[in-house]
Image 1 (cartoon, one colour):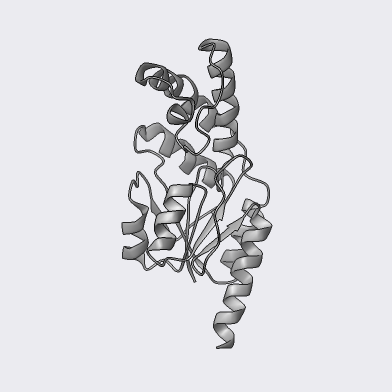
Image 2: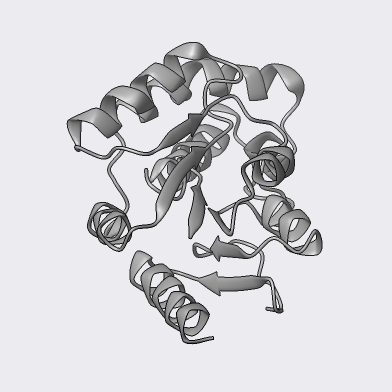
Length: 197
């Protein structure tokens, strides 16, 4: 199976760490009242920060968080299992789009963790086109809008949903999970079914 994998919020716990920083920034720096629209993935939109406040947050925290963020529990083990099982693993990430240093940090962290992939797509704003180009059998992402779009285009998608993120109603092309164990179980069962046909 050809599997596309996002980086932030899927391999690295970037999103959770960034949400913590956003809460502190909103409260302690901006004297804000907290999340205004929980359905928004983008933090500036979620808190309804103005453009300057959003850019200040990015400039202050993105690199810092990228350098210290942990790998999501189970990610390394399951990625190694998927590789052992013969799946082709491809990174498809927007990381690096606004800042090349973010991409370099991610590449170095993946090397440090001995995680290798068959292909890497960085700075991707339209994951659908890459999934179609690569004929991806399954995409793993944590962004609600991306997962929704991919599943609507009949691309099998695993939505790695963290606490506080939008919920989906599952369908034939969309599976919602909350751990890498759930990801592996889904792929394992899907692979077994595929080869029994």
